[in-house]
Length: 125
Image 1 (cartoon, rainbow, N blue to C red):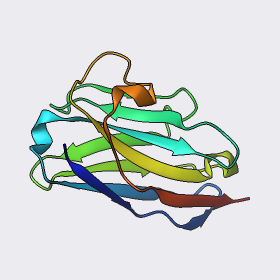
Image 2: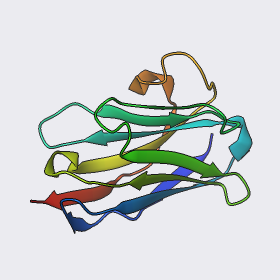
Image 3: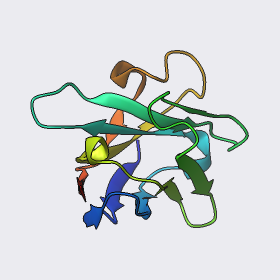
């Protein structure tokens, strides 16, 4: 199981762009699918994006489709979340997660068995 560390979260204005990174260690990175989730205060953790172990399959929550892009660099053991046209409702703690399977219920937290500590993204209006 890989260990995951997110970075890149900060306070930005609405309409801005921001790129989150998640560095993995301790496992074979290419064996894992990866996801991004977020959790706003008082709300459940929700799915944001998923990328398969090969990087060929990607999927997004409807709320971020067309604005966010997930990618991975297997040479750097890192997964990214490029966020653009940010809105105040994107404010949340963002978590990356790892899963041994690329397909199935990847939109559910139960699909993943490794989690980072989270990074705070705050979007001001």
